[in-house]
Length: 415
Ligand SMILES: [Zn+2]
Image (cartoon, rainbow, N blue to C red; front, side, top):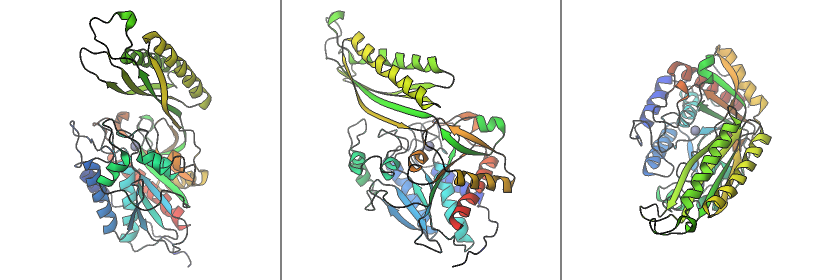
């Protein structure tokens, strides 16, 4: 079928904001942001709402065994591989209203706008909500896109446990999103993700669109300290095997490594589980999660080597045993030059200010870039406040970014 020239379309930004407002009502956090962690009851309510919106626009919805939701708008040549657009609807335990949500709900507008105008692109367009991007409840982050990209198995994903010992696969079934579609293993034409910047560089330079050229190389480790329970009173200092103290020495050392490599390098200590974690008893078990980030892979690797040495030292000093139980890396993937150029051209055509940019945060786009040509696009974020309930975005610049993103996706799908 010959291509029909697409008229100049723009998304209905009022409708986009009404869906963002509806999302902001689901899983409200204690400070008015969002606490919608993966596979919670609120995640289910949001997923149901998203599916209802997608079906309402005439799309076929499929759920895979990782709980990823795909809404598909058929193309004129419907057996061509789809252009996939998406991000995530889950949030941190104290998260913002925009984070990955803007990307998914902009995707919804990319389904709705051609439908409103009776336009069909040559290739099908699919919008995806990736499960558990944040890793706030089930570590690691980006776990479902990781399986989709073939980097882990579905059994690995289903067997992840949260801090209360609840299994990922069981929770996925409980909320009704253990789908039967296989996870990945099919060809994508390309993948486009819109995300808020989560930093303040765009705001400072006045850019409404950020085109990602790469990311920081990040390496995370989960470490466990094994000590011995004992009375906090009579036990002599030299006999103590306090797992929490081993972790404390370690986390301070990890933080010092971050200072050694600042301002480019960063290290984070973000999570600790302690047992029994009660007054009067020395803890026998402590689990921590840390990560190291730098824009040069070799430097991140150097930071990780120092972290491994610090782990051994900390365990020795606290007279406990330590082991690394999980590791994951992401961030230095290369994005697709053609897809990025489509975004730059769209911004140019609309007269929207843009910049090339790198990311220090993780995104599903990193893993998907390993199996499909991928573009990651940023819209600005006020004062760089994110993973915080006060997260906010400038409305006009966001609308511009979403329209540029829409143009790029439609151009790719209609080529
Ligand atoms: Zn995100």
